[in-house]
Every structure is written in structure tokens, then in C-alpha cells.
Length: 136
Image (cartoon, rainbow, N blue to C red; front, side, top):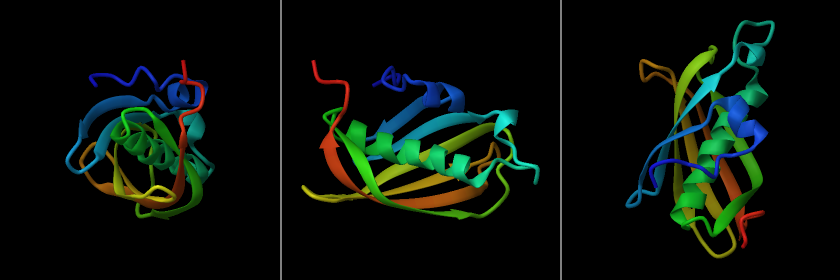
């Protein structure tokens, strides 16, 4: 898959979501994002809930592509650790399917700055569901 034409939607556009690559063996996706100035809190960095949005997006796409677009994860739980302030501008993210069963999926995500420094990490426990809006 050379592009994620499926990343349509206002949220993906707002985050500047772009597909980079997918490694089928490790079920890991790499995506680029752009954090706009409008995401910055009075503290001078991207608001934490919006950081979680980048990680949620990349983890979800890892599962979507691993299932060839048949399924999307429905989150039961997301945990995030902020390691450094996330500044506006370009970001790189990696999402990975850790384990997928019929009833539960375990996902991981990492967010990086342009230098490759890890800014945030996340994990998610989700359930597999048919992908909404893409059936015929």
C-alpha cells in the first residue's frame, strides 16, 4: 500500500496524517504527522490528549493494515507516557500489533521528533471490529 487513501476524515487531515511504510512481518506501520500550532497548550507544547490522538491513530492503522483493511480496533484502554514535550511541527510515529486474537488485540505506539528522539509511548488493549464505513 503506497498511500493511506483511507486516512480521510477531518481528524486525519487536522493531524497531517501520512502513510510512510508497513512491515508485514512485524506488523509495524510508520506514519508522519504534523502538529499544528493550534494544538499547543499554554505550557508551550502539544496538549497531552492530542498527543494521545497521534498515538491512537498510528496504533489503529497498524491493525487495519495487518488485516488488509477488514478490521479496525475498538479501544478498551489506552495508556500513554509523555517522555518529552511534543512541539508543533513534523512528527514520526510507529505503531505495532503486539498480539492479535479473535477477541482482543494488544497494540503499541511511539512518537518521535525529527531527530529520532522518543517523545511519547503508548499501549492499547482493543477488540477487533469490522471496519466501519468501508463495506461495499
